[in-house]
Length: 202
Ligand code: GRF
Image (cartoon, rainbow, N blue to C red):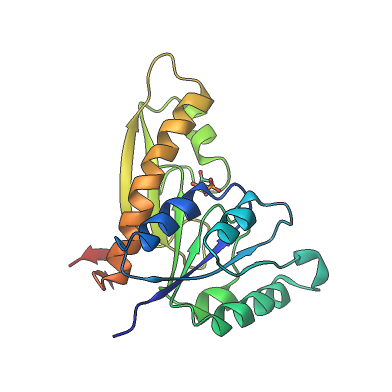
């Protein structure tokens, strides 16, 4: 069987994208690199994609009359690249049901909090401001809600007395860079099964 092709949607820095791409290039994840699409022209991730020799695209949301039309343009590119798995790595837009249906159970996101707590933007800040003692991050399939899809992996991070939002966020990010590649590996090895909205790892 041919290797699954992994493509990426991003909006910024691209450190999670890099963590996954490195593991694909090293052969730790049995997959091929697809394309990278950004909704921001100046996303650093676009440069990183170039360093892997990947095709990368800025698909400007401002050029389309609706979110679906913007997504149609992205889907065209993703299809052309034969993408089997879509990774949203710091992609700051909510995908519409139209996109989610096209790639049902084939879109994986990372969220910087222990879902189902603190969904939406600034998960780390929400958790920090709430005073949680255990923070963390979550990988999950994307469904029609915001950060509500089936949970795949989670990692915890203890909040220290002297933590600032920045220090906590940076320790959470270290964990993101571990569980996201592991999650992609499990998917690409065909080890994830969703039964009644729960992910089982074979
Ligand atoms: C990460 O904290 C991720 O959890 C959140 O957005 C951030 C993206 O960072 N969804 P990067 O672009 O992967 O460096």
